[in-house]
Image (tube, rainbow, N blue to C red; front, side, top):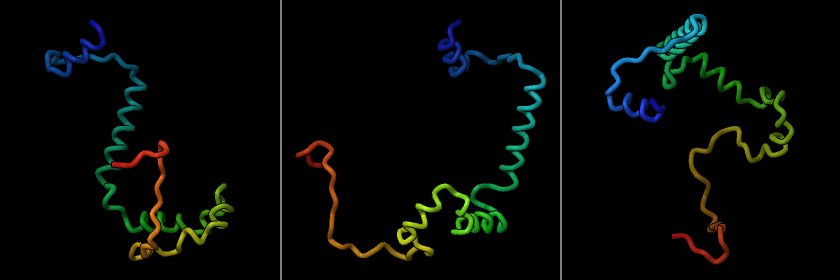
Length: 109
């Protein structure tokens, strides 16, 4: 049976059961990883981070935490582009509109 035929029959439901032979140690290791992933996902979802996790993430974004980064010098050089606080609104429109022609002379739709 070809792989494509097997996949199609499995998807269509013509194959009700398959048996996969696996290394016992590898299987135990993978089962433990799945258990840990499941435990982590049920205790703390992406939307409900603990206060400590939020604080750690916030502290990790400070200038002091970036000192070990290879990009630190470049970031400090352009620190005026990276504000300390996020503005509450978009900047005022200055009336300048930039366009890039992918092929000279063409217009967008």
